[in-house]
Length: 215
Length: 215
DNA sequence: TCCGTTCTAGAACGACTGATCGAGTAGGCT
DNA sequence: AGCCTACTCGATCAGTCGTTCTAGAACGGA
Image 1: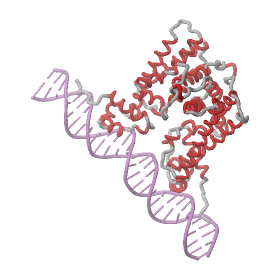
Image 2: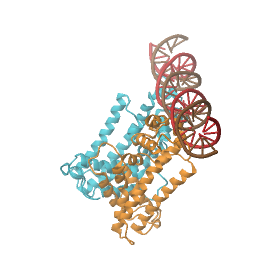
Image 3: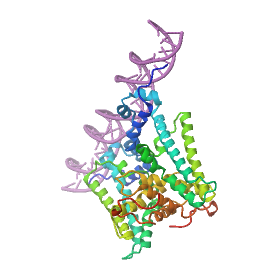
Image 4: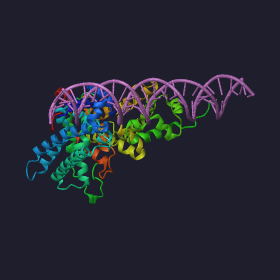
């Protein structure tokens, strides 16, 4: 019934992604996005409500892709009902290389996730619906981390979750950040580093919260 | 002979560091810095010339501290004339934990290095003197990376340097980034991940530039 | 005491930001 | 045909940014 859109929302998000893929968050302004898409700033505000809401939608789309790919990888490696430790390690490596796989399919989307932290990109003032969506994505990721920790060590306390998060989130982001063209395969680096991190179990809370071992 | 300064330059840099320690680079504006220090914007421009030059000075100071601490750690572990592989690994771990040590001595300075990439923080338009100083710091870091690669594998080709850089630069930045208070010791995580990365040597250029092994 | 130099203070400038507004337009529905 | 709604558009708002400018204050030396 209403007047049909002339600017595709997904195309707008694609353009925004492009502006953000290599540049600071300030590279995406309403004006620059309007210029890039051909839409006017008023249209963008009508479609998204605010710049922050647009950033939230952008992040939600990318994080959804990421979480889906991550689930697929973990499911594939963790199909047994009672996986052994080796399978759990393989699943963690699969989770840690999610970004590398996403990068093959959607390069700019992966770059968005690598180059910007969510906290710094999208602020708190969001519509309830979008806030709920982002919260759901965060919960989905947390669930996967818990699942991996349980498979690895049969525990999911805070120290264990931190180590898994370091493997799955922090480490790939660091090693896959696009700088000058790489010679070494990033996914292989991530795999090796993850195996190093998983070589010794995380400290139990009873140990005082300090990881025993190296250094 | 001239009128003496009333605002200490180092104190101004400290304040700027504080503004940048937890926040985006836009958190440091000339106005916010003037308000934080009590100096006027005119004074700041007289002292530093431009915002970019101020950022460059800030980065040079922090990077100098970092490089000094890194050299100290590597020298300590690599004092033998012909170090064996274990000593080289220890030296690489020491280099990788430089940020953790710097964090103990100067928390906000370490946060500055962790939270901002130089390319995104300070632009290209710099005075020749400062540009030269930054270039020297970069060369100093590169020299240390080359030294570590040579000690580890008796080579310093591009693949080897990338692996060492991943160990010493990327990985610590990722694992030491300040989020919610940590339970697990970050330096221990870095050490474990570095040992994982160094478990297998990097591919030789003849192998085609792709790292053999995991994943 | 006056001069030259160096520094400080704060107003002002132009550019750019996110956001808002009203007017106009294009389609489906009755 | 006429209307209603959703959408688009360009102009425009107030605010902040980095930077420049002007006036004057604080010093050592003559």
